[in-house]
Length: 125
Image 1 (spheres, rainbow, N blue to C red):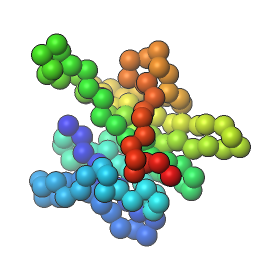
Image 2: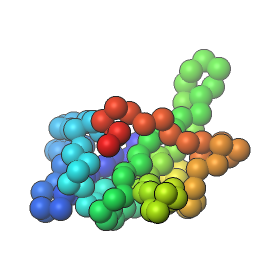
Image 3: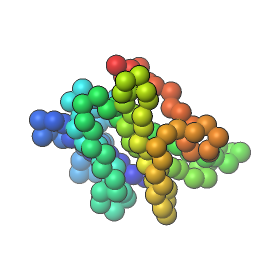
Image 4: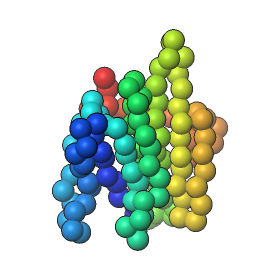
């Protein structure tokens, strides 16, 4: 399962895991200072880095398709950004599958993995 690393505009980083131990949770990310967000593969290599500029907000979710017994059939990592410019909503989304990557420029509720996210309290700003 991919992990992540947040980098702030002052150069400091916040890894999800360090030396095999979880050190941070998603809610620990300070979105007001975030400049880069990297998704890291099981082999500890960077898969995708999202560069954020002022006004862009991080999008990051793990989406899971399950069997009837609740076990995971497929997991997809969704990462990207959203911003509002002149009243219009813009997004850049990357979906990381086990064997390939897809890119989209907006959520689409008709597509299995691209339904819109529900903001968590810490993401509302």
